[in-house]
Image 1 (spheres, helix red, strand yellow):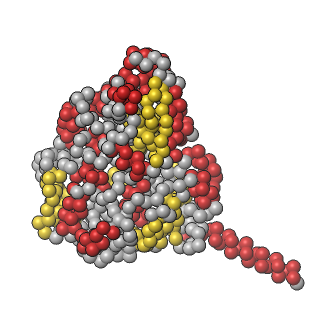
Image 2 (cartoon, one colour; image 1 turned 180 degrees about the horizontal axis):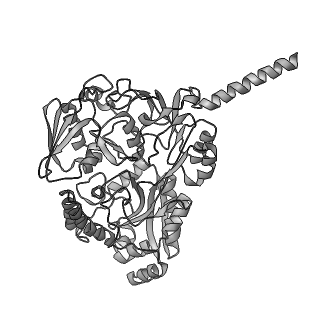
Length: 517
């Protein structure tokens, strides 16, 4: 009898454990668990350009436009209609009817004015709003954007500037961004926030498109990719995107059919501060910078970072996503170690030299890329150290030009005008290469081409400007595209994620699988 009872209890425990494994999600089986690669820096959507933060903002705050990477790009979100005047110097936005913030307050044109005027005051948003002269609200549903000059590619601004409640932001004051709020009009509300461990979201039951199927969401910080893999394999993570490709085979085995590797809309690139004072301004020498570029075998970066699944890059943006990205007619600096050595000798450094430090972030993609670059340069006698910092510290250092070389990344854009954030002097708080520091480069021509390309909607005309612009930038030998990374995604069998996207997924498009509930 004792053996029968013991066997019965064991069977009960096995059934219970199987049920828990089926639901996963830790202690609360009704909660969707996602990985956060690093801690979120702020809940204020106007205060960060970190893609990691922006993905969170996409769940909580809506913009006038949304971005659907699986189905063609930008679409109307809070905006019912956006109409440009004849010369693209004014955009009139009509808001959708009946939209409310999570706090119950209606979304009005005045909230849009408040949001954009906050953006004017924030360096992080400068590259998105520097072309705007002023904004106004003729009535509660009409929001007018008046520009300083014609600007056709406004879509990314309308997507990235997330509309917030003037009333709540004003009430929270300096605390806004550091504590949970209900100031967004998105499908989720931030319920709990810990800057070190992650945050929890709950569904906005009054969301204008209808409450999302998944009611509770938790982002957990797993900064160590190995720990994230173990968590997924143990059923402690439901959705794991941007997975390290070195872990791809083991993650696929754990995920079964629930896996996707999609073309990434991203770039990892090497920047050189030509004005760095290191070693008597050695990086100011054009021949040295070009030698650096020719010395780098990008395929080695691909192997180290992407296990060979990625592809080497010659463009700043991915042509499949960005039809205005030039694809020919510019220097690509194809790997040529002998040419690199020749250029160094011509520059007066036949035996090599110390070129300072490569600044990069703790992201495995960036840090591994930096290590490969360091090793490649050593082959031609150029020595440098790799300094790895938190991404926010890297941003702070690079935008004030406090670096020698940097390995950097960008993602999620659909127009070549995005190059503005790296090359135009109005992009204070964003650009990594400041072409205005001296007269070495024709920065005025570069900025003219940026502005001319944005001033017309004619594709052929835009490409004329952008072809010259990208050729000029590559001739400076300050920005070297390295690789485009594919995006590896796995998910648990209790959710349906719809069409996988490379960057800006929307949890509102996820749903529970009936058999797993």
